[in-house]
Length: 527
Ligand code: ADP
Ligand code: ZN
Image 1 (tube, rainbow, N blue to C red):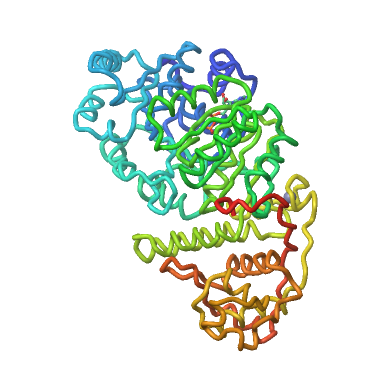
Image 2 (tube, protein in one colour; image 1 turned 45 degrees about the vertical axis):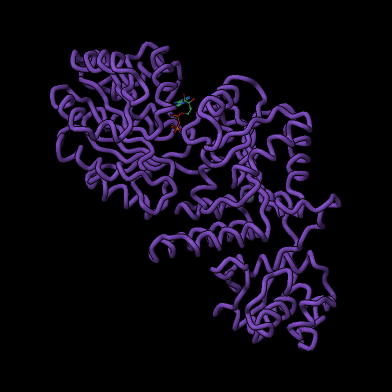
């Protein structure tokens, strides 16, 4: 690091000469300036916004070594390689490297030969690492993916909580915490747990204008819908397809390969070698589609990901935003395309209800899922809603989401909702969607006769709609919290308080028109 006092023009020189960029983006210049002069900072910037430079440049401007805490050992080496290529003196310490390599790195640190040193929190928190740091000049601490400190967040890492020790042990060393997750509660938790009360908060707009959002309904054959999307909009493009389970990842990847696409699976059940080989191909080759569980992608820096497709519903808007945010980091047009259906809603509700988490935690998760479902069922601009969720105002509809481009048709479903709800009620709030639809349609089957539901007033009162339309009604009623799915796993539905005004006819229910189901064979596991 230079011996000169930091100044804005030094920062710009480094940006241009070392990193080869013309100008700072977002709040980069102000952040670099603030941290270089010794201030703490909390940096909230969307994925791809350029958070790394916010600590890399101060690291070079300040005397001593910047310690970068990052949860992802796999990505540290990439970062270090990229920096080294630019002539920056960077290294990492991790459990994957041998003793000699570690010892050499530690020696370089002691001699003050490093501008940046990356490590995972558990490594940093070892007594011997802290002892080592006591004897070095530390330029700053950068805490990347700072939302990992949040217990309610989707990437909670317990070791992150202990990082408050940095403030206590090195009160004079500036700290910069960075994250792309910026909802209010998470932000407050970062500040509290990392003792960043005096940090200046730098918040960039979370809008990703080049990403086009699309949230569609799974009409019964998700993989065909995916294939149509890939063939029509992304021939030869690189992208990520997210699925909920490992099995589904394997199935979809194999099936896309059969269709002649360059698709590779990625999930925690594959061997380490296979995972890393697939990830490398995705990063280095053109036009690879990676089919993955959410285990894939955190910190992946591939600028030309042209689409992110979700075949299942993420469990929160934060997760959705982060996962879709991996598309279009180069600023060029990209698609965030998602399908969801009734089964998603039921599965996620059940997973949540059945989880071992405490009541508080469950309540928060529930709210998050509700917000996500709200985004799905929305009939106006998705981007405005997304930004509103992050406390940001977008005055105009964006013109670059499915709802803006093709306003969805809605219908007055008040009567249908009443029929559906009274059917739930009259059958004793003990049955699942398929059975309820059979009753509404007046199907004649053993089970219905056994329960004498063919004698109910709601038997056959729904014949003006087909089963598909009814599925849409139930899905939307569940999504809106008018109906709840039972915990015990049978998928039976019961009414909530919100059902009352609808049943009394005091509330109009407008629902999206259900698209026609695909003509292909129903593919049950994608429903
Ligand atoms: P984040 O960590 O916020 O997701 P990165 O720090 O990985 O983002 O930066 C994303 C990409 O943008 C990288 O390829 C980076 O080199 C590039 N980048 C960052 N700042 C600038 C800038 N001022 N001008 C041009 N490109 C930049
Ligand atoms: Zn829009």
